[in-house]
Length: 396
Image 1 (cartoon, rainbow, N blue to C red):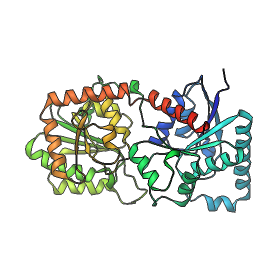
Image 2 (cartoon, helix red, strand yellow; image 1 turned 45 degrees about the vertical axis):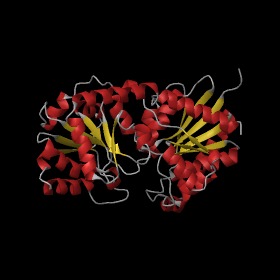
Image 3 (cartoon, helix red, strand yellow; image 1 turned 90 degrees about the horizontal axis):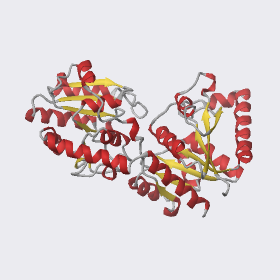
């Protein structure tokens, strides 16, 4: 058998977010008969085991290399690093050791997210070591992104995008379409048991077991659509007076330091529904949240993909969302959920009312959604697509 293709994943971020979860599932499911899988993962810079490393340590059949990366630019550590000759020397030596590792292990592809530090390491290492570079874009790409991230994506040998919507956006930035490979996201279905009992979650929040429950799970900021969802919920309550809403997630303050949760609570108060909207903050028991609700909604604007839609579908929950971005590639109108035009709050409310009032429709959409996750939107198919793209990249 021909030599296996060596693939090195760069995981420089301490946190374990949605993009890290996608990469972990690809790493876990790549065909080991074709690929040898290596991971250069942050070592936490001496501050304990970071979440990303903790996950990577549990993945079998990989060569894991804990690595001391340069500080994140977002954390403004670069200036301090440059002032500290000892730290700069340590990071430089680690970079050279990583380059030597690539040569020693016969790595042929270096794969990273589009985050500035990750993609900068990727391109620099690939150029020096003579490998192919893959920049995996998980966001709607635009000129608003930083210079380093744009430089990295534009200089990568190939770009993976998570949806056709993102592929179009990347192409609009001037990347040749022949360099872009659409690898639709997937999840591990075994982690999502639709028969989980959600009654304990309802009891915890004081939600009656028979109350129609709408749930939303995501980081909290304006583009995720929670503001429109609260407004739509006020209209839903006019038709279904015992309906309840739970919003799960923490404020995302990268773009706005102000608390979006506080704004949403004020909005719910002004609409007279504050007693029926519960904010839980971030939670780790999302399967329990999904099990407890009747329908799931995240009316986000120009969502690049929406992994949480797959999670709801895997739990046999119908989805109410917006008909733009990558969402229609995930949620099929009239089959796994209902989609409304962007910013159309009455239409969003109408779709919620329709589903809350029709148990048969909820069950049929939920069953179809889970079948789509099992048959297609799974991590195994995603890894197969990634592997096929690697081979195309190496074959020119």
